[in-house]
Image 1 (cartoon, rainbow, N blue to C red):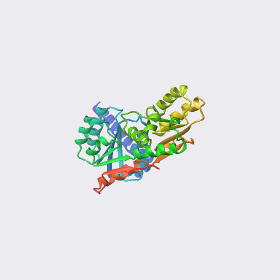
Image 2 (cartoon, rainbow, N blue to C red):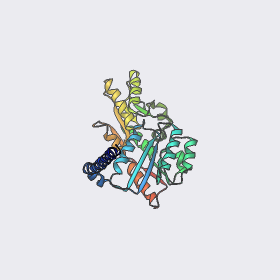
Image 3 (cartoon, helix red, strand yellow):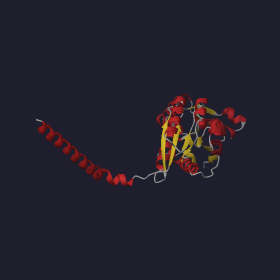
Image 4 (cartoon, rainbow, N blue to C red):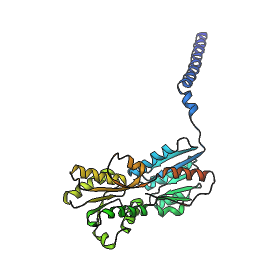
Length: 300
C-alpha cells in the first residue's frame, strides 16, 4: 500500500513539474516578445486632480498618458471626486508609492494644504494660485489674458454689449473665475453693467440645460462666449435644438479639447497643452536641474 502511495505522489510531482515547464514555455511563447519591449523608467510622477467631472481634467490625464510614451517617465494618476479629504488620502498614498515628483491641482482646503506641506519631494501646483506658496513650481494657463483676448475678439464684431452672452462656470473653479475676471476687465463699467451672464456649470450637459432655459425667453443675443470648449459646445447644442441659428459662438481651451468637438464653426482662443510642460518640468526637478518657479502658458 505504501509503495502504491509513493508511486502516486511521484507521478503527481512529475506531472506538476512538467506542467510548470510547459507553462513557462507557453508564457514565453505568448508574452515573451511583448515583455521584451516593455521600457523601464527612471522618474515616477504622482498626479492628484480634484475630479474628472470637469472635462479639462480628464483631457489632461489623456494628454499626459499620450505624451509620456517613449520617455524615461511614468505617471500614477488619481482623482478625488471633488472631496478634499479624499485628495489628502490620494496625496499621501502617492507619496507612499515612492513618487519622485508630485503634481497637484488642489481643492481649496486647509486639510489639502497641510497634506502638501508634509511632502518631502518637489511639488508642482496647477492652476490654484492660493497654493502657489506650498509648491516648488506654480503652473497655470494665462487665464486672465485669455479672458481679455476673448472679450476683445467679440467686441470687435459686436460692440453693442447687450447682444453678448457670457457663460460662466462655478465660483469654486479658479480657472473659470480668472477667465471671467479677464473678460470683464476688457469692458468698460457701463458695458459690464449691461452684459448678460449665465451660470452654465462646467460640462457640456449643464451648459446645454442652462442655455435651453435661457433661450426660451431671450432671442436678442448675437454672440455667445464660453470659458471652456465644453460649455460653449453645450450652448451651441441647445441653440441648434431650439432652431436658433442667428448666434455666433466664441470659446477658449486647449487645442486637443477643441479638436474633440469636431468640425464646428466657432471662434477660439487656443492654448497649448499643459501636459508636455508638466512632464518636462517634473523630469527636470527629478534630475536636480534649475526650473522656473512660475510657469504661465499663453493662448493665441
